Image (cartoon, rainbow over all chains, first blue to last red; front, side):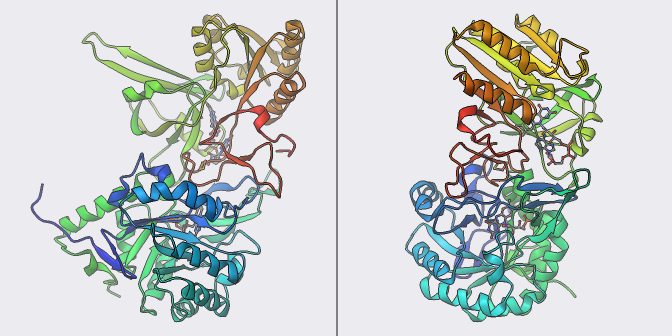
Length: 307
Length: 274
Ligand SMILES: Cc1cc2nc3c(=O)[nH]c(=O)nc-3n(C[C@H](O)[C@H](O)[C@H](O)COP(=O)(O)OP(=O)(O)OC[C@H]3O[C@@H](n4cnc5c(N)ncnc54)[C@H](O)[C@@H]3O)c2cc1C
Ligand SMILES: Cc1cc2nc3c(=O)[nH]c(=O)nc-3n(C[C@H](O)[C@H](O)[C@H](O)COP(=O)(O)O)c2cc1C
Ligand code: FES
């Protein structure tokens, strides 16, 4: 073992994280599903499946389809609802010594604010991540996530309802991501997570039908990485709050590129489906890269892109 | 568990149907009939997702020096990108495996007849089941169906277990002409109300037909389902299937990878067409 150590700690929106690697909402269940494959205490934080007030059915099937270098999903935000979350999922979360960030959404501004207030009351929840960007549900996120005024007003409502760090997760399906980012920052967001999935579709030629029952779905995986990198880079230089980079991160190289582009932390999504231990492996390989480069502090990389 | 596995053999046993034997860690010997694995084919991002396959058989070999190694087998049909790539791999190549996963078959009362119904590649999870049931001294029968004789896989191996095999093919090239459910119904008539449990795996129309037969005759029936999967561990909710109480107002989705792939047919909603 080398004597040398590197600092991997980062501070994001008031949270001290042992490293900048988190798992992305909807790709890591409630943490427990992966506990056999990942030492959760090696991660910076983990983010749970999008949660709302009442249990939610989600979309009909098929809900997923693979595409070159990626996948489309139209899960439709199926989740157990906050009561079942508190009863069934919190005990496990309480037992893990790693910050748990709860991703949530609502169908109305009031529901968003009520969710923020209810999550604020749970000591096990380290921070909140607002999903204003789910592309799958017609009445859901998309309305809020594509209009800066709309997004600003729900962020403001949630801000008033919680003292915990409030992350806002942005949709890439907009013409001006920087305007969205600024609106959310102005409304009181402590950090911005981006990107959520890109809307797409897949067709079965022989059946002459869309493959997904929902017709369209959200694209994730390596295919979206270049789009995500650009958006993270644009947003990071336009706002003061930290940016959390998401989109097609499969390995430590991808993760480090996002830090260079300006992300203070990153989230691993689809990669966990292919390799359930991906997030932990990324932490280990980032450390190894730092050592090999003679780099002592991960924070030196954040925004260090030479343009 | 997740492990890197070495291919011991990979052969085409019937046109488009392959049989692959792979090394596994000792703990894999605990795999139960009906469980499956997620296979990462190729190390690149295309294909991106793992592919699910049933465990056909599990075994171990003890070498002269006393060490024991575990291996397992899968049967697969070449249908697309992933299975084509898999068929191009040779002994000595390696693949990454996640599993065994999911909830397998429940054995039930050992004295009653066990009627296994398999269509085409759906025979894959039934062999390990047949082996276990035979070990428990249950009377076991197999009803195997396919489009032609080429779709009837490994019948000799079922026969070697002492399983009575009834076959049906749509083109009449093996056994009765038509669907295997005809022979199943005839046998159930002959049983004249004696207790029996049905186990089925195969194409959706066959599963529906078997589930209906079971419901009409009030017989317990377990079916093994297929669904598009991403994670295989209950995290993505991509693989769900409607449960018996499902409606727009009373959501009742079951997760095929974690709660299944084997379900009591009476627990599922068969109304909605596939
Ligand atoms: C629990 C379970 C057990 C299975 N056991 C076997 C088995 O023992 N032998 C066997 O030959 N096949 C089995 N299948 C089906 C097998 O997973 C698919 O045939 C395979 O994934 C096709 O991959 P491909 O890349 O060749 O096809 P492509 O059509 O190129 O695949 C594209 C995508 O669709 C998915 N997909 C395609 N067909 C199916 C299918 N029928 N079910 C689920 N996903 C599908 C693939 O996984 C992939 O993500 C099983 C499926 C499940 C869910
Ligand atoms: C199956 C699936 C479910 C998802 N569910 C959610 C969700 O509930 N809430 C959310 O904010 N994002 C959700 N996402 C988006 C991811 O968190 C992430 O932003 C996106 O997948 C891009 O990252 P990736 O390419 O690393 O997967 C989901 C993604 C996938 C693939
Ligand atoms: S495949 Fe992900 S939940 Fe079943």
